[in-house]
Length: 387
Image 1: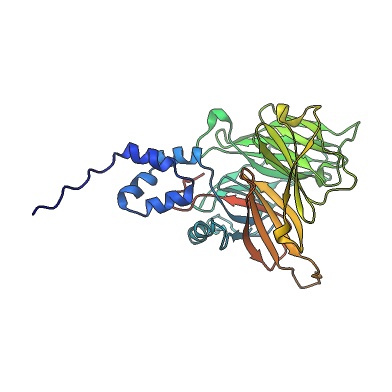
Image 2 (image 1 turned 90 degrees about the horizontal axis):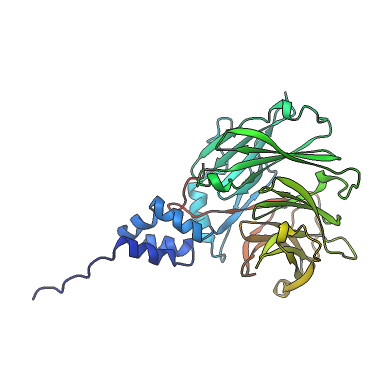
């Protein structure tokens, strides 16, 4: 008796539509492992562009900012990103040995699979800057800012703050990016922007803190990225600085009044056209909101929107580390442990998805991390080169 005829294969365009409806990269990776036909479709560059436009990459761990070599700390079980993080650890080079001179680099920022590193130069006030893709071992050396653009600034007071920014809308593709470098003194800020498309720096905008001195010293502010804007805030300041990359201008936004300084905060996208402010205390994460109009630079007041309890993790000091790539990174340290010279507290790191407010344990470390940047990417072979 002849075997029954096999079912005809599904057309590629129908399979693509099915794959696009998956929840995220982990599901797509499992589908790609099912058979060679599924893998061929899931790993095609054209399809991955469509998938990435609909599904943000998961956070896989974080980079130790300001650390030489900038070690990558991967997500561990039971975090859902742990399998993908293991794959990235095996495939990527977070020692940056593929750079022509791989020593002395400090990790400064990470965004959408790219990492920005800088290195002091003994012969000039400028720093060497390189943007790299550690997963695909590619890099771009960023030229120094032309000296004539900063000739009028007092070099003894200057602080350089380089960081990554998304490409402009008209030049968006998976390989385009921008680097912003704020040159700051106690009295003013000048922003310079480098485009990977033109390969050149340009002076974008500046901001003087005189005569009002609403922000006493911008060199003490901590940067946050939301949509096409960057916000600088400090727990002891009543104002935060805003750089709108669309309009290329600085402005100042007030923070909610409070009786005492907040220990930890983050500026986030709260959804529904709202700008959000997250503040942590001993047992609760508080979210304040205000309308997004004009990037939050409005006369409308902040309002307390939500309390997110941390009761299941009672007995810890909570610290907001950073918010990026759609996630909030937090650290919880057990109470009652004395931090002595030569010893480190055991820190538990958690992520909270900003869209769903779901909190999950990322990893446990026996080392002190002062600053960190979430690293989000799809694991190979689902990741596209970013440089």
